[in-house]
Image 1 (cartoon, rainbow, N blue to C red):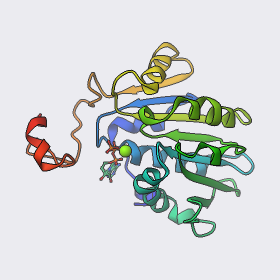
Image 2 (cartoon, rainbow, N blue to C red):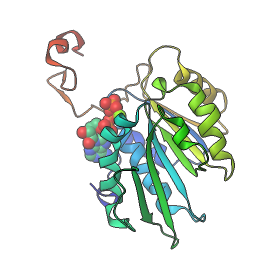
Image 3 (tube, helix red, strand yellow):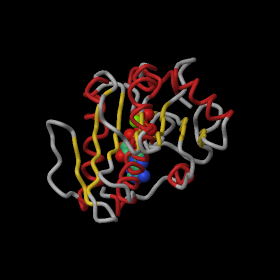
Image 4 (cartoon, helix red, strand yellow):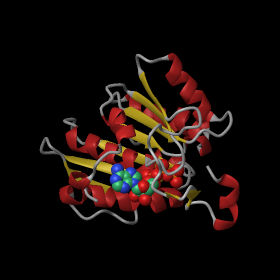
Amino acid sequence: MNLNEYHPRDCFLPFHRRDKRWAVVVAHRRAGKTVAVCADIVIGALETALPRPQFAYLAPLREQAKRVAWQYLKDLTKPFWSKKPNEAELKIEMDNAHGGVSVIYVGGADNPDSLRGLYFDGVVIDEVGDVRPSTWYSVLRPALSDRQGWACFMGTPRGRNMFWNLREEARLNPKTHMLLEGGPKGRFDGETPNVLKDGEDLDIPPYLRKKRRR
Ligand SMILES: Nc1ncnc2c1ncn2[C@@H]1O[C@H](COP(=O)(O)OP(=O)(O)OP(=O)(O)O)[C@@H](O)[C@H]1O
Ligand SMILES: [Mg+2]
């Protein structure tokens, strides 16, 4: 699915339309967080008018980032590639709407040093709960300062981790943060994850499914 074929799920429309610098999205498993956030980065990369724009998609582990997002990002950007994506560096270069070239990096928070020295105009951190706070506070946050870049944090609630703190920060600062919450358990009303069949979450290994019947 390239960006022209992407239809946001209803629950993510307010996310794509946000006008806040910081966004925290709390959603249940398989809600479509990774797809939405990848599409959002591509939209940002297309629309920016800044010189030499740079964006990043990060997951807790580089391997995980590659597994879950690299293919989505390649598919979404394909019509705009200015050269073939670099598989070794997980780097996509695409023509943007202002005649420039935007770069999207895919990386892991397990190797934060590889991100040092870069600036970013937008970053998304997927599965934030599993990312070490120092990666955000001492590596990524400063990389957004140069050009007032934006950040988006995506996750599923699981105890009091950094994601919980970020969510509190968003809740307390509605002027600067967008908080998109999918209900008390992270479930969006009226929205069924596409992996549910007869009440079973097909994403859960068969031997665990019975316990999780909804
Ligand atoms: N807008 C969309 N259009 C078509 N398919 C979608 C869309 N959003 C999500 N999907 C599909 O739904 C499934 C779940 O999407 P995704 O991986 O983004 O969910 P997630 O919330 O990140 O899941 P997880 O909790 O496992 O990280 C995938 O098969 C994906 O291709
Ligand atoms: Mg995901």
